[in-house]
Image (tube, rainbow, N blue to C red; front, side):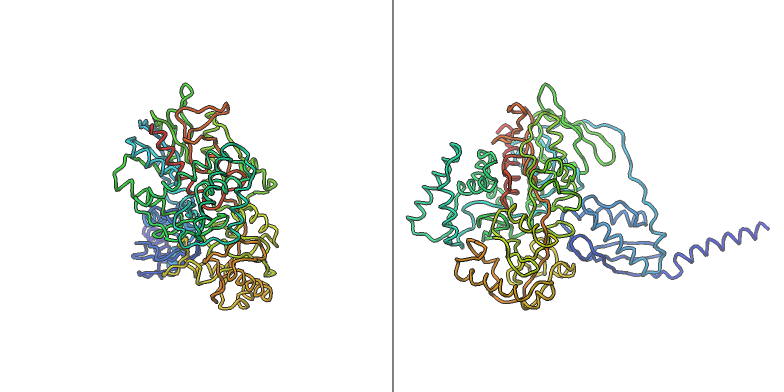
Length: 633
């Protein structure tokens, strides 16, 4: 009887094993699933009914945000023999795609997928507290934080840089990376009649304060000398940049901060060049930038180039910067009215008391991903920025630093002014699904233009929201689409992935393009004809555009692209009030000793509307100023 029971158990175990792997075959399997930016192709090697290795063969996912899926998620899948591992924060769709593709491979190998979906062990949890002493603590390792860290460390200060995500870069890493600076890389540009009228309008404004008058007078003198020179090259200056920025925000920003930005940003550009950052030789005009002073990297895709450059420089020079990832700041340590450190905690529960004898710099970004805060503060969009309104930002842009500063007595300014990016992905809000510049012509399903695409971003967003279903198309030329030799766009996303998403269309003729995209073909042909005539003449645009940039041309024949877009929450202009030295100001108008801030966490630099391509210069320039000020420079 006993041997019969034993034989029965043995048979049951064998049957279970048979049901799991009788048809499993050792070998190499590939499968793909759609991630955030397109197809994620995965290779799985199966040996002895186990996952021996997992490898991503090809993808368009965003660096560095999605990188942790390869360095953390995939090793856990192999180690624990399960696809039921935690997703990477900020890269949820990439995580889902990899796990789904692995499951496909397992199924193809003949394995029972359910046997590979048991929960992975939970990571170790700590209840201890660690004390660290340093000179300066920086909270937030995006562009502003990295810039501040380099400036402080090069000034001889020891820096601890906290980042709640598992990667450095913040929203800078997922930005378009464009960078406004006057009088740089503009030699190829000539002055149009429309642009001349813009300058004349600016210098004929009625001064609203002494600095405004000073800037107007400087531009008047510059403009007079320019005309006397007989030049037809594009006119520009830091003062013109400041006046355009201030006017674009309805004169509501702190003009001292605006001018601090525009007159110092060229130095930031030079600093990056010395670090190895290579700029494209020709400036352009990005969406909402108002003037052709938008620069970008030659040797990097999107905004990630700034992040990679700073990180490489810190490592190369051996700067005293300690980067603590997966570690969020919970509170500021304040003693006698002075900020002297940070209380923090990592994802495993370990707490930190970080003492900083020279102060704390907050560079945590805005709150575009915080729906509650968006609707609490919004004064521009009728409190309609709910969960169905996508954002271009990372999920981590939740306003943490603003709340920390507020608790420490910081004055918050202009919190109600939130920017919508005019042209985001209808599903994810991302800006990475673009073919050509987002300042190319916009058409609705009737095939007609309805706005001057070189206008302010708030003007564009309102016009786009007024279209049917709040959707519109950006029309661009394949010859001007900023696609590299590997078939990837300016964000590194594969064109084939963009086209296969069903949100972008390609055709050799405008008629065929209209048919594919569901646009009125007759009207589209007529619209493009008028646009081409304007590009040829340089005057008389039906929507009032002052100029036709080379990257916006459609007169060179097909193929053409039509990309479906909608506005998405992009930038929160309000935040912590600072002065020109990046020192945080309290509710009484006085400096809070030991507390500094830079980047999107701050308010008062942009007013009601941010000029396109001013955000990265703002973050990096004021980050540098904050680092130097905290270091006593």
